[in-house]
Image (cartoon, rainbow, N blue to C red; front, side):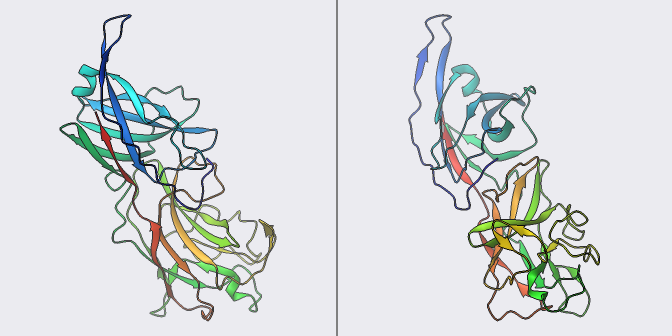
Length: 293
């Protein structure tokens, strides 16, 4: 999936109508969507809507979002009897070529119908990030050079003299994972993906940027001490860079953060190495919208 750093807002309001299919006499109705903050998923994935009828999912159709944030479809023809019986709407992310007729684990929005409309949100199905918080330090523990300590970021808190997890994040639903980022001159470079903030991230042993002394502490983070990425040669000072924690679909083939970014912080120019720094709220902690029938 290819995603942009900033969210586009899609707001399309279309009133529901009913019609009769001349071929088989089936009476159909329209399901209309107005969703905020969806992004381009690239060629390999699509969005798919679902309605829950008698406890079972029924697909309402797939759509894509372009780089300008425009939905390819905003109104879908559904059998009226089925649509009238729907209790819930769910939006998922699916493979573009999908042999599985059931919804994927990567469910992004959900909401119950009240009358002919449903307010949908990611809070009810991905996680609620209202209480999320984060702390990080600048350090390069994977090499023996003490002159480049501001070239690494580790999501831990050492303010009491002992290292503890620096991220307080909710458990994600199936199909999602966390990912850390540093934004270098407008280009985000990953620190690694993880599910548990009290453990090292997934690339701790395989990072091409870390030094040769070790893998670092058992928490998410990264040393940018060797190699290059996006035209940036390491080591490089992270002061003035933006640190981000995003929520990513799993699987995910994108080299950029997904829309959900619950935590972010610009590293102060006067930040001290090996000193706990608090993160702030990120630009997007929730996605939402409305669905009407």
